[in-house]
Image (cartoon, rainbow, N blue to C red; front, side, top):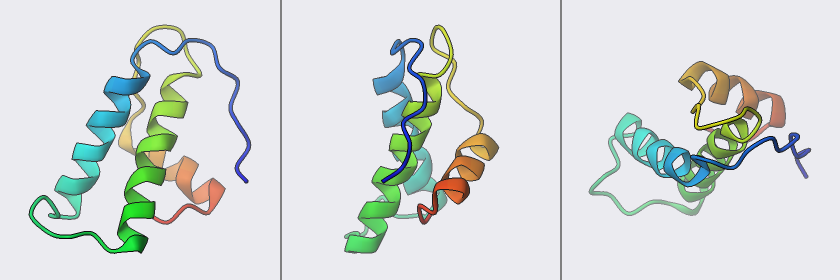
Length: 79
């Protein structure tokens, strides 16, 4: 299990989650494909980490792609 970051503010968490889903699908060019189980886990893990990182600061401040990628590497979540 991955450690939960300290929650400061949940404003923008859902928006960040949705944006991360779209960013991942775009990066993988997977808008029109059926996802494998592994891809689905990677997609949801990526969006989850982005939303969690957003919640570590006050207000809606979505993380940069590099921060999400570093976070997923640190947590061994495939991207």
